[in-house]
Length: 459
Image (cartoon, one colour):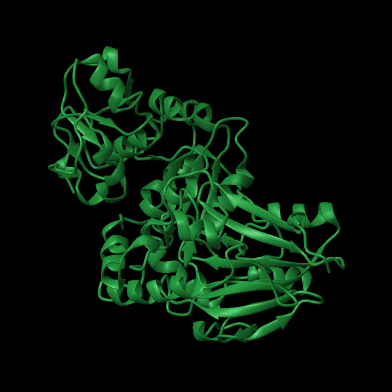
């Protein structure tokens, strides 16, 4: 077939910072690459084009989402393609370096590209001898390479050296070969900020700073020195993807719960997650609930802050989609979803149960108070309030004692800070306030200049 740009359909998950791909093979069939368990967008895209997914390829054992390949095998009869080195425990076509799959006019060639994981494959899409593009997963990504510390700190350097060799191999492809990575901006698998999610081999030779490293040692220092923290659930999903996620025969639902049921769940060791906007949570919430507003990043913070083996109940506003909550949870392996509070906070108050409130204050209406910054380390280093206590949100539960009495908690806008305040309140800090804004707002209101660097008193 003659392959054109419109035959490739990127499917971007802005919350996790990843891209899956749907390739129209030209005969009513399609190839899916690195599809996640939430297949709604992929099925819709295939349906619009009248395509049936015939192949589902995974570049590696993903740590940041559950693969949708097994589900595609069930839904469409797709042949699952994956690395033989991954020892997956479900039916699949196991590929080794150099193996090729005839897609019916196009060819998919497996390229061993370890680094992000040991068993990582890139897939080179060929039209005859012409290199159309390469699905690089977590090897070569736009202006970077994916992190190499997910298998433990003792493996980080070894895998970084493997990543260096893999990038050298990929950049030996033709300069015009398209590069279709999985990880992109917003991914905790270590992609730099930026709008571009695809590129070419030639463009990366010119622009990727890792490829400009003079030797392997410099590459390793540069890559490993850029690694920040990552969500706790990453440590669980690789093995779940190796075993294969359970097949879903119907869309999972979120049952309605009475206020008394939510209260009992909390008392029995479950968790209440308030998905309303930060301001709504501040005005009144279930005591002990964790605030995680329903937005693109919901799954990341759910998986970072809460266990996957305890029942979860949710508090929502009218108009918020329960189905979105369910799919965001299921795509990262959270399936113990007890339900949602029927009637929301109105029902909680009608049952005459106590509610808690949190001060949510603009910078020009708050006095000088101890300042706790819960942003990521790179954000903090780029500009922070002088004297701020820095504790990343992901590690706050282990550092609640670092929050001074009467602190104002802040992030970039207020959502993560409200989550942090809910964690502190659950730990007994009842005197915290949340900044409605960011560090620049606070500095301007108090005549301060933002500081740079990473010196701080937190974690």
